[in-house]
Amino acid sequence: RGIQLAKTRLATYLERAREALLDIAIDLGDFPEDSDSEDDGTSDDEEESGELRLEYKHLSEMIDMVVPRHKQLRSFEVIVSDFLLMAATLKVLEEIPEAPALETLSLYNHDEFDDMDFFEPTRFTNLHVLPFHGKAPRLKNVALWGVHLDWERTSLTLFKDLEELELAYHPEDVRPTYKQYAHILSQCPNLKVLALCHSGPRGDMIEWSENVNA
Image (tube, rainbow, N blue to C red; front, side, top):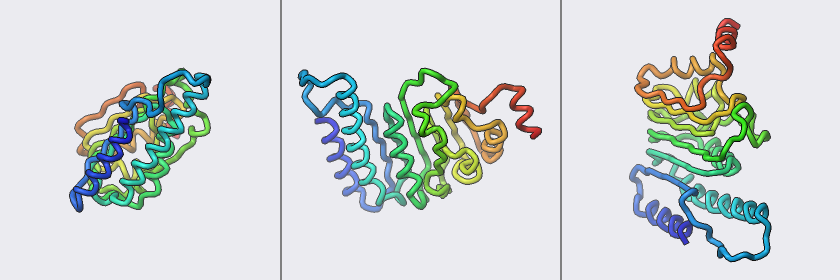
């Protein structure tokens, strides 16, 4: 199975890397189902729930392999299609004490949003995560698709000195305020690339003005 092969390759890669810097990419979207595709009488909802639990298990196992080597991470990328999986990833990243060698962080959630005004699932709307306790002094490149962090704390720590920042597919209620957004940019004097797609500060120009003057 593709996912089993990926886990085996990851384990081998980590073993052979020894003390070298690591470039880790976990993409669950490219793997076929591990179970047989024959009709077993389960409903579509049951099948989808089972697939999600299986992906959660695979993701947890792979991240657990990487966490002990967090000081060696040079780049870390995770691609999922359900925010439950991304929330689990963020929880782990929040518990890692530091990432001293990390240069690139890419988190992509390809879950489809029916409403770009309100984030779903709503229980994760107020998820205020600061990966690596904000300790990633070499971080230069960040990409967040459908993933929101603690904008206030990241602007003070994790996002300092960025060279590239990509924000995409953030529903209105999880975007940074204009003041938070402006502060993020002010902390990045070396920023060379800023890419926005269905993202940016929340509200409109009138709200931005009120936010700044508040």
